[in-house]
Length: 358
Image 1: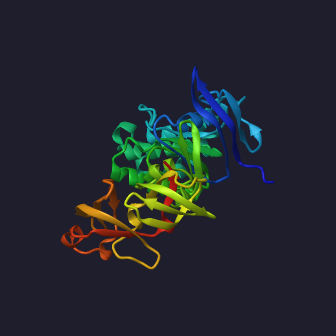
Image 2: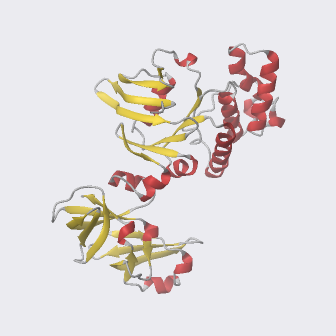
Image 3: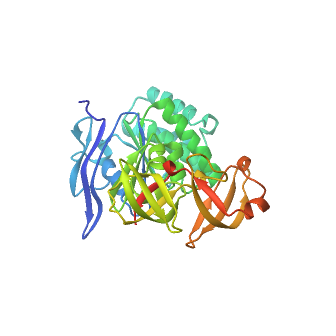
C-alpha cells in the first residue's frame, strides 16, 4: 500500500472540558488541494494549527511521509503558512518580505535574489519590488504573503481563511490566482474556509467539519450531488427539505408519502428507515422543472414570488403543508413572471432527491 504524503491519525484536541477536535483521521496525497470547510467552531482551524505545530494535540498524530511531526517545533517543520491577516513586515519592502524566510535559513545572496524574482513573477508583482506593504492594496498584500510562504519551497502550504478580509470581486480574483499558482507549483495545499462557494471553486477535495468531526470527505461534486447527511446537504449549496413519511426501501431507492398524501418512488436513501418513519426529503432548487417528464414527480404548490436573475428565475412557492420551497429553473425553461405566478404544480426527478431521517 502506498504511504500517504500527509496523514492525520485520530487527532484530538481538548481545551479543558471542551473538545474542539474529535479523532479526525485523514490522508492527503502529494499535490492535492484539500479544503477544510465548516461553520465557525467546527474544528477546522484547530486541526490546521495542529498540523502547523501552533497547537499540541491532546492525542493522535500528524505524519509527513510516514514520519511524525509532533516532536518537531513549528518553525522547523518547513511548512508554509498564509493567514487571514497578511502579517507582512511594514518596514520591509515587497522584495525584502519575500526574502525574509530565505535570509533566516541563511541561503546564499544569489539564491535569494533569484528566488525573490521567481516568486514576484509567480504572483505577478514584478513591478512592486521596492514598495512597502502600506502602499499595496489588500489583494496585493495577500499575494506577497503567498509568495513569501512559497519562497523556501515548503512541501505543504497551509492557508487559514486567507481571503475573508477581501471584498467579493477581489476575493474571486485572488481565488483564480491561487488556483493558477497551485497548478504551476504543484504544492500540497490545506485551506480553511467557511465559504462553501470558495471551497467548491478551489478544491480538489473537501473535508466538511461539524462539531469537531469530519462529516463527509470528497470532491465538491460528491458533497453537492451525493450528500451523506442532511447537514452536508444543507451546508453545501441551497436545499429544500420537505416533510415526508417512509413507506418502503428497495436497494437504495425509497418510496415515500409527502404531506399532501402523494406517493413518490425512486428517492435516494443512505440510511435504514422503518415503515412509517418520519423523514425529510431534500431537493435542490435547480432540480425542479416547470414541465413534467416521464419519470418526474409532482408537487402541488402556491406561487408566492417570482424574481428574474438573468440566466435563472427564482420562484418562492408554498406547499399544501405551508412549507416554503426555493425553485430556480433556467430562464429559458420558464414562462413570463405572470405565467409562472399562476402555476399550481411543479415537478422534480426523484432520483435527484435524497431522503434523510427527520
